[in-house]
Image 1: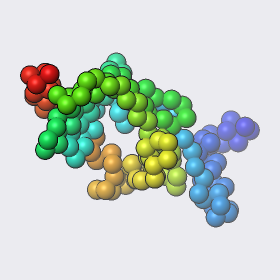
Image 2 (image 1 turned 30 degrees about the vertical axis):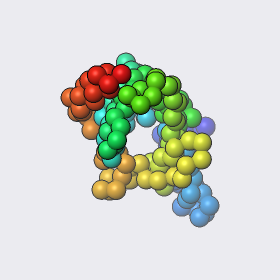
Image 3 (image 1 turned 120 degrees about the horizontal axis):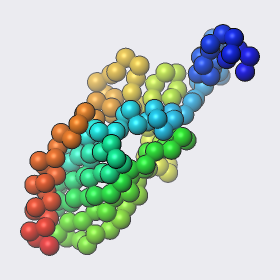
Image 4 (image 1 turned 60 degrees about the vertical axis):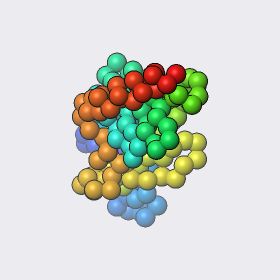
Length: 163
């Protein structure tokens, strides 16, 4: 604690300083706070291979998927926690099935300056964001604003017309 007050070193800085002394400490893992995660998701659209999800500032959320034989839409909320989790609670519906609530969570961690993500409960960790932003980073699929609202509305009309 004294180092924090006197030297202005953050807890992450302490882990990095310790890492210079031992290989095990170099693998120090921290967890992003809810505030830090908010910077990744709030008022942004996460583009998927077959759809997208929009994370509104007020924690509302909507998503859609479009596969060759089915279109689905979802509405609900998203939540963040200080243990590095982002959870989506969405009610999905399509012309093929009635509304069903689904909770999906992703864990995040910071290791060696790189943010990693995995689907809970037991997905494998993958790169979410490198310090130098690599093309393969999942964060590259997230755009500022509600960039796919027209696609959501089109999918919603198709689902509604067949229900």
